Length: 180
Image 1: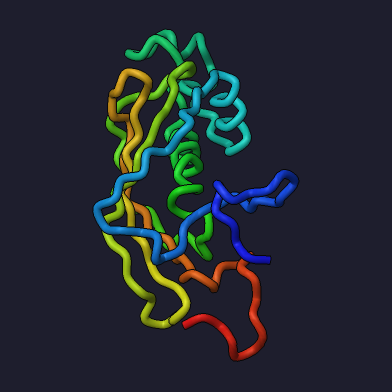
Image 2: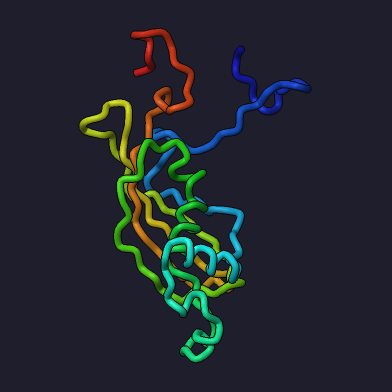
């Protein structure tokens, strides 16, 4: 079946959603706005903190947190990181074979229950893998903001991404007929 452009679709035609990017789709300097935003609730924070054995009372004890300089519970920074990374997946690592690492994770402002997070990622670098000819490495700088535009977190992340035709769910051509 040939690929149709959206304007050429027929009723009942199956359209495959684009999820993630191939190495060729990244351009150094591009900035992806990750939407929708995500509101973190107090319940999210308490469940995540207890699930991950982070029993610091500043995350799950309202009476304790009321005595702190913040006067209310702080969202666990690891939850903030997990949500922000999750927000980036469709744009950055939706086709990735592996995350290669995060570095320079900076927590620049507190996050509280009820805050809504938004994020963006700038492509810093892309290169072909030296040891895996069908893949490459993409490095991005991600910045997260709350609903008031206050920067709350930023980090650099690298992922191993396939070239077009080599993704996990790409059609597999006959042996020896792989795209170059």
